[in-house]
Image 1 (cartoon, rainbow, N blue to C red):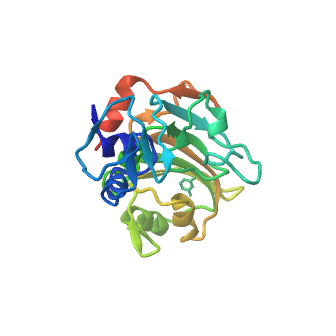
Image 2: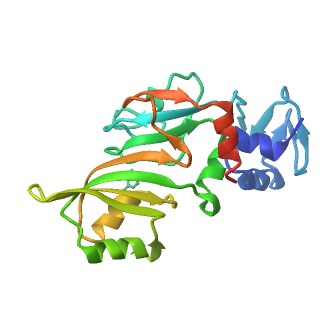
Length: 236
Ligand code: URA
């Protein structure tokens, strides 16, 4: 038996907080009966309806994908582009944890575990991600200092947990940088570089918390181990 709001959040339908709101406002039914009590426990075979939709309670799955370029971080795409979900060998309805841009490669998690997704994407316990970027131009010492001290993007400062210029190519006027970012705002690396007038030419996410791309080729995915899933839960 599990608490109703936990079952709803686990299904990926919405966050636990939102589930509580739906319960309190009488929008959740268990076996056809409206339930407004937050602590209500439900069994596996109970039918839960939320906003008149029957909740599907699938087995939880967790995949680590080495996302290739030209794939979109969503479940479907109206322009017919390849989605990251289509690269995962699963019959369940999985979705990406956060997003990587269409042209960004690297580590992306996919799951149908809404509770873990909420944990990993909640601003108060965002995890560190390491990115490697090829950028236009060569950073000056002053710019490197600015990045390390933190750049203000849309009124909020982003201080990298780690920053290094890996290589510079003075002929092509490009540089390779590596940086660690905790927050999860969209296009954050590109926006940081754009604020210093450096275009990002290539971007790859090399790691996500303790997870890396080791053993995977671009376009390949592997299931997470139980140990890895538990470790992700412990980041709470
Ligand atoms: N930052 C970006 O600019 N793009 C990504 O895909 C990820 C982080």
